[in-house]
Image (tube, rainbow, N blue to C red; front, side, top):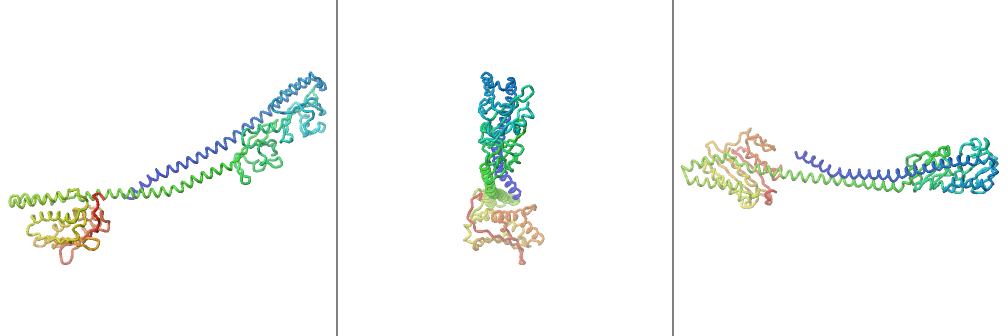
Length: 515
């Protein structure tokens, strides 16, 4: 029962102590995961999607402007007439409206590559002559009704070149070019602190925003080029990399968003380590506290159980003795009223002492007075057949002893101590010896039959009593509850005759009633 209660208590304490700690660790992990999803994944995704949307929109806008303006310019028929002020002003107004706030340059050139109209007098240096038919000139020649786009090396990165042929009467009469600067395109790449890189299908970096360290010779580093929604380590730093396709001038480019997460991961590792360390430190402390509390509670329960059992044992007054005494008093009232009065007074003192709430232990001399009243009643009952002697060491008179402990021993001696002639000779002796009191009750009867003696000795060794022998078992159980399992009665029937009962009482200070 004790083991069961202690294990149940340990489980309950563990549940209410360790589970909240684990819940706190789980909540901390959830918060770190939520922080990662918001601070890294969410911001990276939003920045990448916004940049992709803006870049695609710029490509679409200039494709539409190029087609519409080329058609507008083709209405002039003769390209040389664009030198006239009226035609020139209308063309400039249209072209400036196309580039708007982008800061782009525009050029209208004839089929030989001479600039007819433009925000600058000469074409950018990176454009080859028209006569070579390379690059964008080759594509415009093959697809005169399609807006073509390509990136052009520039001092600040790579400009976006948008062009369309100006077709008059089915023949290419000239070309319209928009040169969108790299600075403007890079500003579209990201409004946040997340580095961005736009690459073609060969891995060439066409646009980049704060991404110089992720490329080499204008090519994206291999470990970044193959990463998508994963962590990449570069040196001592760690980056979270995602990518998305971006349509650009009829081709598909890829936009990479690279988020530095080294510091954040370090904080997460420190936080997770702190949580794990707290759990590892707290669980042993909690388990130790659980074991201690369960042990103390179990001890308290054992103590309460012991007190309850002691009270039950102390309250078991032999009813046969009381009935026999009352019967004797009934006859003595007629035969010897004085003796009846003495018996009533002795019985009254006996009952008053047995129910008195003066503690679980009393001084030996107080308990001896109780025994004297008890034996006085027995003396009236048996008369001259009872010879009772008491030998008490003077040094033991103030020693605290369990209340009502010795009466069952004398009762047992009276019950089994008659000799062949019906006489009772009982000796009760208490000796002081070092740290204990030696108690002996001896009678001069015929002794106890061997099988009966064996039964009594077996009863005293057990923790439960299902027999009719209440007195000796109660004394044995009280001694074990008060002084431990090693303490108890010893019953012996020596060869010289009679029965002897021995017990030893430790010399302890007087305890309180519930101690």
